[in-house]
Amino acid sequence: MSGETNQNELGTFLKARRAALTPRDLGLPEGSGARRVAGLRREEVAQLASISTDYYTRIEQGRIGVSAPVLGILADVLRLDEDERRYLFSLAGKPSGRAPRQTVQKVAPQLRRLLDDLVTTPAVVMGRRMDLLAWNRLAAAMITDFGAVPAKQRNYVRILFTDPAMRALYADWESVAMTAVAQLRMEAAKYPDDPRLAGLVGELSVQDAQFSQWWAAQNVASLSTGTKTLIHPVAGELVLDWDTLIEASDADRSLVIWTGAPGSPTHDALRFLASWADDQAVEGLGSGVS
Figure 1 (cartoon, helix red, strand yellow):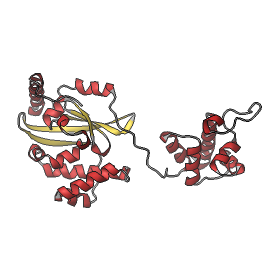
Figure 2: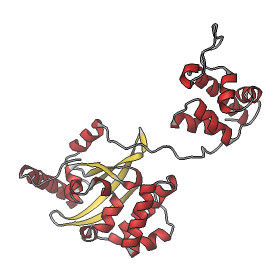
Figure 3: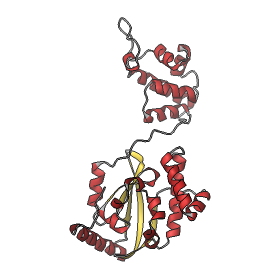
Figure 4: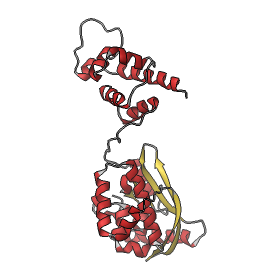
């Protein structure tokens, strides 16, 4: 797409957004008589943005480039949501200048149903900072009772470093933990001003010398796919392939699943562990999805 086309589309987008607002939406007087155009007039947008009407008109007509600060003011004036704001800045070829507001991440009912239906496949939903948002019974039986962990501490990296059982569970804990630190650093790059993530890094750096060393190494990695070997106290050795599926409605929310190759000892062991977890739940000792 050419720069000229982007400028034209930027103007078209601004027109559409101001047409969707009324003076009353922004606390402006309606004025007398019928309005020739739907929504806000150009001069009203310019007034609210503290720029001249001529300057704003040239922006809409694609006759002039626009700076990131002015784009930010226009985005605020036109009440753009985060997606619309990112789109506006993208059309202008500018970085947005701020991280999107972080809302509380919730797991949709249909995703919880999917977790429950994966009776022989361990699965968790991971959010920002690698927080654990939801899981199925088999994931809890395979890794740890996530429901027993306080909600504010329910973070995969934190559990990996603070729960001593994790070091016995993973056959190569150091490799797993080092990769997790690299993945957490990738999260920090996306949200450098996240106070909860900064608090987590500070806490683990003080508590664990290895975490501090690996964090300082500046290695990065994405949640994607891989293979891990677990030495489970009930199911024995599990050689698991893991994969990450990004949720369409929230790119910061992922479904992580572990599987064993069909016909392999791990495949059979997962079915045994699922049966064992069901028995524990019947006896009132198992944990459910939070």
